[in-house]
Image 1 (cartoon, rainbow, N blue to C red):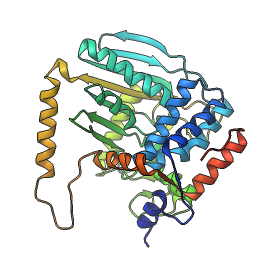
Image 2: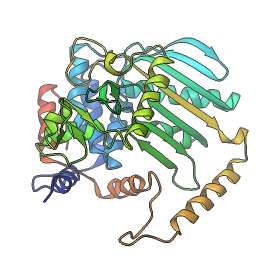
Image 3: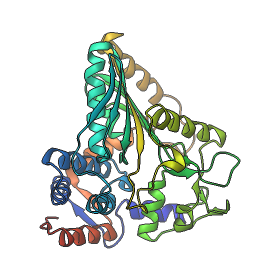
Length: 363
């Protein structure tokens, strides 16, 4: 079994010691852990929902395996337990929001919903955020806009994880770009890092003790590596060389520079710095389709476009052409019914968290 097969097998929970858990129970347990650290009920529910949503969509690198680090940062006081947003500037189509060092997922939901409310009045709105923290799975936020009949667009600054094309030194963030548009049934959702793989998958591989596939990353000396620990100190590779590097650059500009937040090497790391806030910046945008074209007409167009793509001739070995986000939506429906597989390593970590924070283990 090569490292790619090994990684996929383990993160899907197909190991001998994996556990099948109900997603509702997992969400309630996660919420209880955040409540134990003094987060308000609604905020704790938001963070828990975002993490379990990642598990449902088949993105465990951004799921409950991150509970430990988020709780530790709350416990250390390096992230504010309550969210007290400050609007520093506001116009009909733009807002500058100070997150005051709150949990990024709480901030993200608030900012996306704010963008949607203002877009319903002005047609579109950009909300720029400073003094924030890690957002979790990025695709969660533009889907909130798509559920309201709008196009959502999100990006963020991030700490170094990509060496700019031609360099061996990490400088740019593995800043995801996520866009969602409503359809007649499921939304079309693009959630991608500008790198070959999200750094979160490297960190999860390190936690699970598995190698990463060739072509994912290089070590701190700029040499290709399959060692997850070495990769975590080095750089994941940008997609398409200068193209991925350029996408990350503009994520630092839109998420960090425009909002007055930090970018790249000036964003403090999520995993290793427990004394300083991350100082991240984000951009959330919403476009009210109904202000431009009839929403049902738009959805008819999406249905026609996606149907034509899925009906195209397929190359040898391809059984079905998938649209962005389609696999994740199918996984979500399946796991809502059948449950979520949690790897043994993460399951044991969840039990330990219950003991540490005196929260009854309910999984």
